[in-house]
Image 1: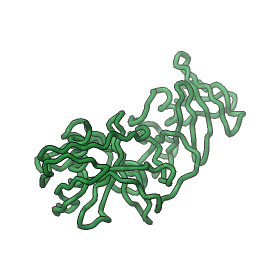
Image 2: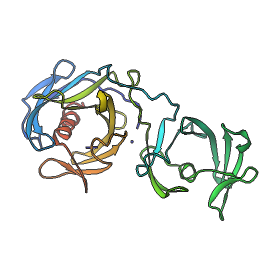
Image 3: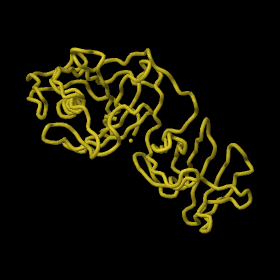
Image 4: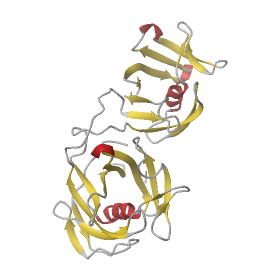
Amino acid sequence: MRLFQKVFFIPFLCALAFMVQGLTGTVASAAYDLSQGGVQYTSLDSWDNEHTYTLTYESVPRSGVYANNAPHGAYLVHNDIDGGSNDFSYDYDGGTYTIYMGDGVTQKISYDAANNAMYVEDLLDDADSGTYTYDDETTHYENYESGHSILTQVAALITSGYSLGDTFTAYTAANGDRDFTIIEYPEEQSASNLPEYWYKLTEDSDPDIWVAFTYNESNGVYAMYHTGYDSEIEKYSYRKFLDDDTLQVLEVGNSGYGAASGTYTRESDGMFYSEYDSISKYITDGMLIFKNQCLH
């Protein structure tokens, strides 16, 4: 196990008049309201041991969390290779990109495609504000008055119009070509930015083994949560079913928990695999119960 908008919650009624397909066990034929009680199912843990799990809808604990108070944009342009050393975040209002580096906002940039120019308001050093035009010899957008240039990964984002979920390659001065992915900024969770409720998959015999998710009905994206180090609650992945047999995964956070980013396909054993990784079956089984039997 290892991109997208704010979380919206769907109605809680979960009609389950069925036999769950692709699971190790079955769910009894009944109608469930997840706000009143959970749904049990049998599946396999990460070591292929069979257990009973319960899907519940419950409030999120308000303890064991921490906050990142550094200012940042809504979207993070993330480089997985170099530990975030080339990362930056941004906001976009339809015409202007607000760029954040390190601990704060640095620039506001608008792009004139017809003239291949960027208009920069530099919020750290006003002398670097001005018009930046592309130079074929330097392969940068440069302000010839100040000698300042725009980082190539920032320029690639703006000139190509990349957006949430896109991956692109840009040259970095320190590390050469690097792949960047645009994700929703992965907040270190505080009580104020955790969801109020989530859907939780818990192993009945050991309640300390669980994952949880929220669901964005507008785009079909699951945001996945687990308990990280020192009992912090961490958002570790975004996932989206293309169909019952194909799952897109985008890893977020810094813990390395969960499945790596990629496209996963369900095989004959009911598990989802990418070329190099797999997802614990009880998690995808629970997500499919929710997808197929609760979204009405």
